[in-house]
Length: 136
Image (cartoon, rainbow, N blue to C red):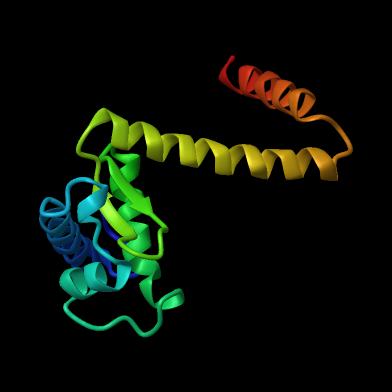
């Protein structure tokens, strides 16, 4: 289920173990006020120090993305003090995080619209049309 293609069955078992650890740690960090930093979370999940904060934590971010794709409400905050990962404790936590995701997506689409020399509504309409064609 969580296996990487390079590790075969051993990679799958290892990933499942990491996912279990990740969920166990996050279950103690419910709500934004209890967020855990990426480096701390990495230490708990992998039982080692990350090599660096960006590429050294990529594997952790991939596991978090997998959980999110399965509907686990893993949220994050980029605040200087108290930022990190946490499980949504309320619908409000999740709503705030989803609005942040939507704003980020709209900024990316606005940039695409500028590059394509069109308006954002026109681009969104074209994307919607393409999605409708793909589903049909």
